[in-house]
Structures are given as structure tokens and as C-alpha cells.
Length: 299
Image 1: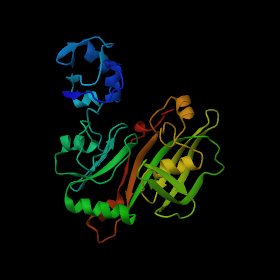
Image 2 (image 1 turned 90 degrees about the vertical axis):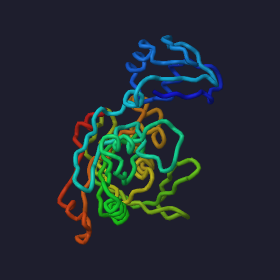
Image 3 (image 1 turned 60 degrees about the horizontal axis):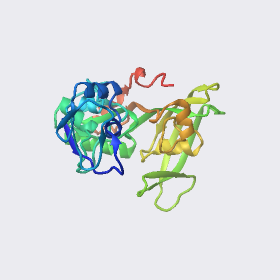
């Protein structure tokens, strides 16, 4: 059950639109069923009319669990697990974790994994909320520190699949060395060809997997040798191949044309190259991949 008081409306709004804005991942069928079953209260009164108006200072109670409200998976997909690490699939629309205390009632993927696997695990990195794919968790603090060091030292290879606009690629492989600068105020990262103050170097390899000339899009395999905020999304936008569905770095007309409003970007593969003195070096013989069904045929 979730209970919250409305405070951000500028005028009255239909309750169904307000709930959709609060829980964008919730399926329409689940929402309408909640109205039919009178699982929604406004100021203590159960309602079934989706057109009921709400306003500031109204209190809404929704008697549904998080799995329905946030459209969470019923089961975790875990392609790899051992005594030290766990790698799980994060769907689109779920925040990876919260870096500091927050008052939001939205669950994080870290919290969701802990619900299944226990509290003594540590998320080791993040994916953007609307990027889906594999996330590495550590089962103890020693592993956690080794994984963090592995990311910084380049011992962990990360591979993504991206659906991008414009099939006009003249080559099958591109290597980019650029600089990225994040605007802390807007959260927007900009790509530069040369160093500018406070920018960080990024290295990216792009392999063109398929080109669809009639539909004018392509599927890319992207390898990042540095892990900076929005590196892939910002770079692909800067070379005029924005990720389809990307509302921040993409184009609204493209997203509308393809009817995609979340970026088609997927973290699909991890491989390892730990130093032989690192206790995680046994992972060097292992390659963890996301099942194709999670990212194939998305257009």
C-alpha cells in the first residue's frame, strides 16, 4: 500500500492521469483493475470513477504492492552467481540505487535484489533508469572493493547493444577517443574532441551489427573502456546517431516516429581481465552474457 499527499498540482486533474504520472511503469490493465476493485482511496473514500478530480492537499491511498505499482519482474533473472558475485538483469524504468537517503517511495533495483538475495550484498555500479541490462553485485566487502578497483583499472570489459537512428555507416568499426564534461546543474554531458577544463577522457569502440536502410536505423555493439556518466548516449548523439527512445540526448521526432520513449540501450555482456594476484582472477575465464530475448527485435 502507498499513501501520499498531493502538493505539486497547479490545477485539478483527473485521478487516473495523476496516478499514471506517479507510477509510469504500471500497466494500464493493472491500473484500470485497481479502479474496478476500488483499491484506490481519495481522502479515505474508495473510488471507482477514473474521472474523479484531485487537487493539492488531497490524500491518495493505493492498495497494491510494489510489483504491480512499479511493474517489477516477478522473478530475478540471474545469468551468473557464485560465492563472491551475483549478476542480475535490471529492466527499464527502475533506478539502479540511491546514492544517499531519499524520501521517494519508488523502490530501487538494489532494494529489489536484496529482497530476494538478502541484505548483505552490494551493488557495484549503476545503469541509467531507462537503460536495461546486467548489473554486478558483490556478496562481501572484499569483493566489492575488488570490483570497484576492477572498473577503475579496466579489468572489467563492458559491452552494450544500442538501436540508433540513421543507417548511414560507411564502416563496420569505429574507435573514438573524446572528452566528456557533465553539467552538474542540468545533468547533461557534452562531448568534446579536445580537452576542456574539468573534462574527462573517454574511449569507445563501436561495431555496426546490422543496418536497416528502409527503416533508417542500425543496431550497434558498443564497448566502453571508460565508464563516465551518459558516455554512450552523449557520444552517439554527438555523431548524429542518437539512441532511439532517448528523451535526453535523442530527438523527439525520431522517438515519436518509432514510438519509443525509453532509450533502446542494453548492457549485455561482461568479461574480466583481473591481475593474477587478485582473488577474482578466476573470473577471467568466464563471460557473462544477457539472453538475446531481452534486447532482440525491439523495433
